[in-house]
Image (tube, rainbow, N blue to C red):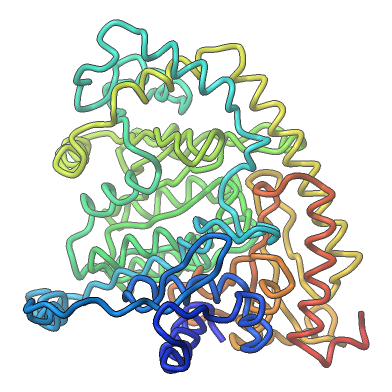
Length: 497
């Protein structure tokens, strides 16, 4: 059962039983509810929170949940928000794609798990890996700069734009860079600028759920183009442009999320040529360039660095390498599209707060910055190796087709026990959901694979993050728990454990 539906079902059952308790009476403890309904602690917590939001119960930290005492009736008429169902579904012309705003694929990586649950679903560095002292010092120095609390240029501070341009490389200049409020905001700006509602947009398959959510909320139609360990497949990309007439392709050429693939050197010029011939833009999400592992070797340049014709709209961010709250990124583009990007960004956000931009300048210009990147590179390699070894030892039933040399996660395929190699048959989406739910009951939060596909997935997958945990010991314990969860969700596999 999906977590979201489990919360709703539990809330319905608890709501139906409230009459058993007198006003002010205490409900059973969370532990009792977990055991009775066979759900996870987080499901109980969210169901009680839903009842509290409805005014039916009151939760008191350390004491439990209590039925709300009745209040004196007032003459205020009951609210009726049913009109919103019509308003929110009326998107104008019938040929447009109805907009939907589903953030569930994103919140899987944003929601903090309950205490005791190992965070294999995180999308950011564990606090022990974040440069907290360096960021605090940078923010303190930035706050003392003359004019630090004034209004910045709408395009961003010139010095910060210049730093991003030099970091990207090629012939890109500061004049072709906009400072944005994080990669998600920059991607939203790019898609709004490049594709009208109802238009198709080509995406890698699988791909980042947050990008799919952006596209769908804007009324766009994501069209999948498969990737392999060398990145997007050029011939399939060309076929997709011809079949759909799309004018935008969104990709992550470096350590792709979720596969970890790097676009091969021979494919890079092909992708740019195919897009140019189609009269289309390539949105390059260069989200983890600063999370290369110690053994990554020399990284390829961003696509935009080798694109004089303005095909590429580049998104680069400091957030993944620092902190979820350090939301500073860059949008880079050549030609008239830059003005459209600027206009949409100004309309949406005005500008990135100047103290944050000043702090970013202080941070990347300090001696602590390269030291931090070296530390993270070594730590991520060690954690990747620890998770890979633990999975091979305890969970060989999970296929790991590619071990990345950058990023913060592994992409695994679930298969039936007893198979091997090409003979292994992928299990269905119900098994993926069962494994995810069993993992949470066992004390591990992971990301199911379904949200990473814009169409039907070819197999069941899960994504495991090794960056959001405390270290190798926690990784080993998490995989041990996953072994038990796998056996629980797929009883037929117990004989192979």
